[in-house]
Length: 396
Picture 1 (tube, rainbow, N blue to C red):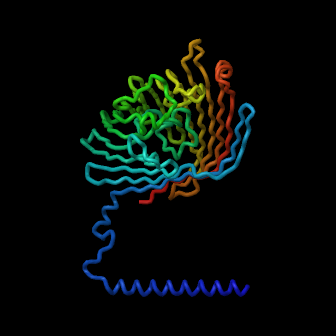
Picture 2 (picture 1 turned 180 degrees about the horizontal axis):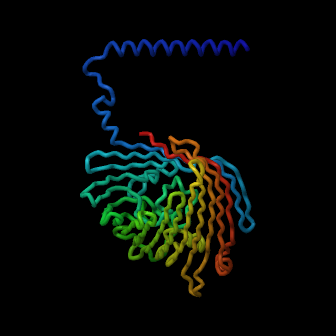
Picture 3 (picture 1 turned 90 degrees about the vertical axis):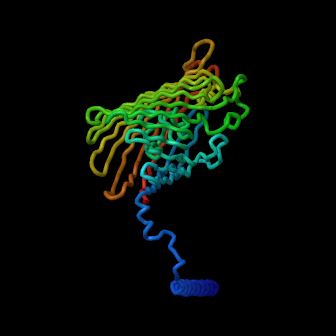
């Protein structure tokens, strides 16, 4: 060891010794000076309040190896990625009032011009139990869209289909949940249709006849049903939203799920007719400095799960998405995308939910001949292998 290193080590030991001594003296002085005015941050008689608070910390992290092929473009790479990191807090603040909050750290924190919250704040609402059958929700919440792809936490979806990968899932407004019968409940929401004003969202890329509405509003209706002791479930929704004045989006989803002891299968069908393109897929295709108008998106999504044993679970997700424009020659079918995601979960622990996974994600995008000739687009595909873990930690 050099003289310089020896000197540095001696100095470090002296500093640590001094800090330790200072801590002991300070702690002893603090203990001797306790009086009736000193109180802990959370007193013993308040600890019981913590029983009404749930705190979760959700994580999905993995290593991904990917390739992209399209036209004359090709690239690949390998990287670690924090795919999902979120802190959630739920609390019962009154016998009839709950609050819910979730911060997704993977999203931007810029305050949105319409709802005045950052995109990273996904949930910030209260749930008021008006009666045994009726709940009222107020604040920023998840939209009551149907289907089972949407019902999963984003932590559990490695790749969304096209609509839900671009849909605005968390917005501010009011909603009700009504348990009409034991196996059937209904939801209704009135929400902002956007989190930003139109000019902030689209900038100069706007159709010539687009105007900001007095209220960019969305109305969403939802039905959840259970049949045959819960083995068959349904999740349907219908919604209308006006992003601009006098023009809006009609969105319908029907979801079905069959559940047995070890096996489950889900199928969703989605149809979205958009007088102003809110998903941006057709807008990206035509690239004429205007937002696309009168477009349609039709999707299919299927996921099967099988529990091999206590430690291993297999999943297979299949998806398609078709985009349609509005062209004078009526050749409106523009693009179809396909997706396949086989996944294997490994859960080594009984007392905590940590799932290690290995998955392949294949996405293929096929354009029609008309789209290739008119918009100068070409087919492409993305392939990805992932290995990582999913951990919904319950902290409190």
